[in-house]
Amino acid sequence: MKFLDVVREVREERQELDRLVSGEQNFTRTHMHSLAAHLKLDPQIFL
Image 1 (cartoon, rainbow, N blue to C red):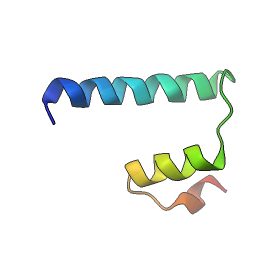
Image 2: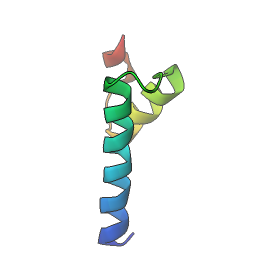
Image 3: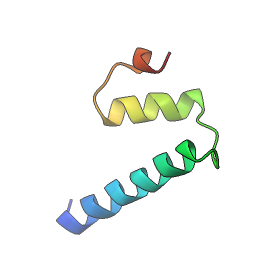
Image 4: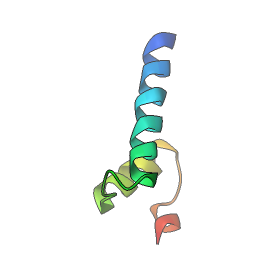
């Protein structure tokens, strides 16, 4: 993966989190598990 691809992916994830925080997007269980897997965290942290 090229550096710019990584930057783009991080930017998109940041925008998704910003939409979540602002209430523009519902954060589903699937989103939580996907985010936890990407960040290498235990999904239980969202409970």
